[in-house]
Image 1 (tube, rainbow, N blue to C red):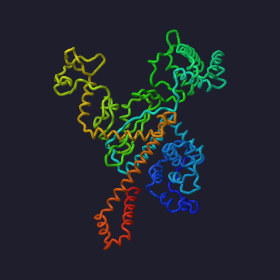
Image 2: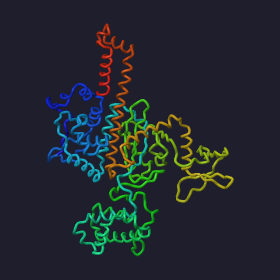
Image 3: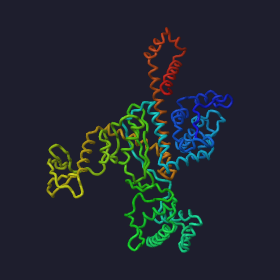
Image 4: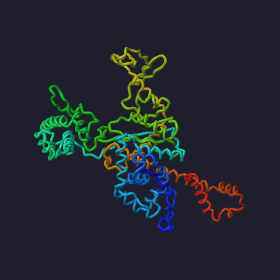
Length: 558
């Protein structure tokens, strides 16, 4: 049964932590600007437990453990890069961690491991079955509250993406097919196995005992190709014999067969050429969601994470949106959903976007029509010709010779609705498409930007670095896109918290400097209508600290 937890914890006179600490420890424990208190106020207490109510029965059953505590534990785990055992050890014995979760009494119960794992599983299963991203909704809700409290300016944003490898081994083509087949066979019960031909069942038993990596190491290309052909025929027989199955292993085997084989004339099974296999094809049966991508010198089998954050020079900047997709997803796909999500979270209209050249696309021109898109580069080599569309037509400038000419419109290509233009050169004719005109316009626009404006995007790379800091060899600890999303949300919530901590410290430092000014002190004295400074407080130093504390608490913890 779903039941909201109580935000206010009752302190026990005998077991509350503050009553057991000596002065210096109590000072740090009670410091409202320390990370544990800020984590509780800015993250844990902002969690809307009703978001997760769909995971529980609303009427019957035992009341659920505090969802706020469990989700807070999930965020802490990724924030510090702990293992599950380290997480529970800190939550049981680390007083600051317990305080960050709202456990102020030494005997306040912590949810057990099974409850923690059950909630994670329910979140995963719910998104898989219904497509509802509860952790994403939770991230947006928390960030919306932080942006409102600190009055974050969301009219300018910047974004960047990062390729992250999945927690899988690098498999060859033979290993992918072999292991998928073995996983499927092991998932069958006795009744399903009895429907198979005896010959096929014996062959499968041999394949299950085989170590595919050793087979690849000891076999030639021709031998592997022959084995793959035999396995393809076997898979086809299995899919036909057990077509009534609707299990995940069956669907995975069917996917591998369609990706790696094709049926030609007379129902002959043939291995597909490598060039026909898509980058979205299965990279490992242990992580069906991952995809392949070769980006520059980086080859990744995993996912692409896109980060969007606010971009204000003198204000607090927070991450407003996180998108996780397969590694082969182009950056252009992230632009529209990232802008829409940012508008929803900040409640402000996005006026300017800073991004690199990988994000520019004609398809995004419509959604970004009223937004100033600041690109730091354009993909591809710069053309020899500068193209400018005017009311008189297309004007072409040869950047090499400086020659200026006017292009003429020519016949459209077959099955194309776009106009194209042509100029006559010494070697023949040169044709220009709408894409070439657009690229020339973007390059000309980029050259007109100041260096300061172009450099504003660079700080998002530091955010990407912080996001992936706990990773080893740029590989995630998890498998599956849903788990990757949960990891990314938790990391970004922690990054936002650290920024809030640093921002409040800067506010305190600036306030302290202002307080030291004699003019300010004099105005305070006059305001309180006191005749001497000694009447304000005995010590000038103590008065400054007192006023800083009052103003800071009013500003930060209102």
